[in-house]
Image 1: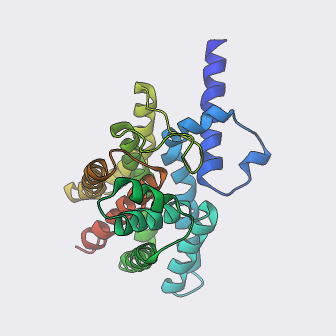
Image 2: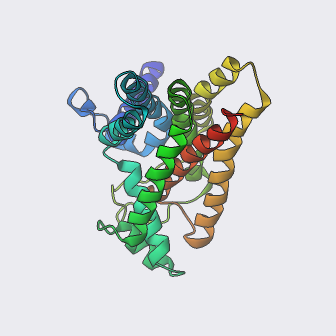
Length: 264
């Protein structure tokens, strides 16, 4: 009985993650328990398998029909549509908050919660999209598709640990989604690592264990550690926006390393 209950709870957590991190109508098929949304970060990389698979498939498939530049644009657009630009919204709010809030912690949190986008947010999105485009453009279509499959779950896995390392900067009542992510259990943490590392380890195996491949792991890890320390110093805790920003910047660091590593 306990085993069935555990399986049911895990299924609800996964389903909640798919509903939360995508705009696909999973909610029409099943409504998970409300408390399951506190555990969505534990299945963030698995949601990344879906978003990465869609983006990689569109990029490679479109490159067979259109020019490569158009294929990249369509791939980026496909993920924006699939996720509802959830993490991009977090990235914009993150830069708006820290750019406009100065050293005032409360002001930073207020700006990040504001639904309006400011100058810093607009500039952040422009620079992010441009860098993402040119990083993918530097790779061949097959290499770019493989990197997307690796980078998306890996970045989500590493970024998820900010939830474990930091307290929540707000309260559940003042949170945008009224959700505070729970801390991981040992089993959940181990599962999270497997979800994020599996595509990366398969890529390592595909490349016969080349040492240079490990830079693809080190880059997002260092990026997230540095930003987590910055967030801890400035805010004292994480927000949903900071998680989204960490994810996108960590993923971008993988593509930047790949643009150098793959061309060597």
